[in-house]
Image (tube, rainbow, N blue to C red; front, side, top):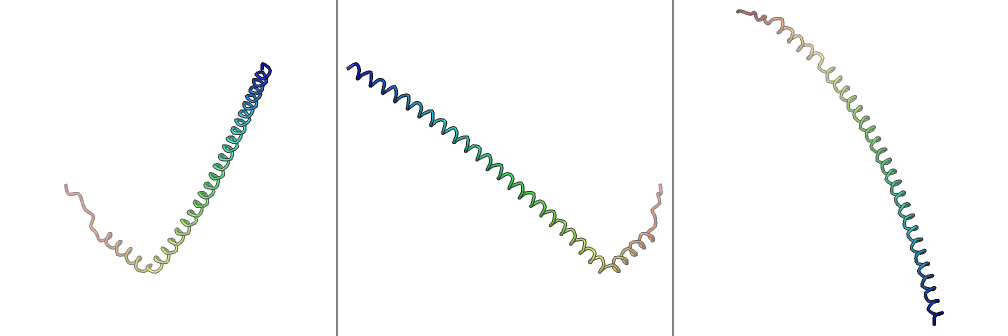
Length: 110
């Protein structure tokens, strides 16, 4: 009887040791999996940041190109407009100069 009890106690101790080892191993596996997931998440975030930065940079370049094109078009349009109305502009300048020349200066009559 004593032998049976001792065998049962040894078996329980062996089972407890195996369970403890299994729990430790499971804990290690869980930590490793969490670490790997954390690293993969960090890598994915960095990759997403790089993709976003590249997209932002490209949009800035595109915006600059569009702005330059619009400024060039505005300059061309201005030259065309001024070219069409050169005579009118010259007459207006002459008229303004004539008005300025004909205007009597005000004198200070104190």
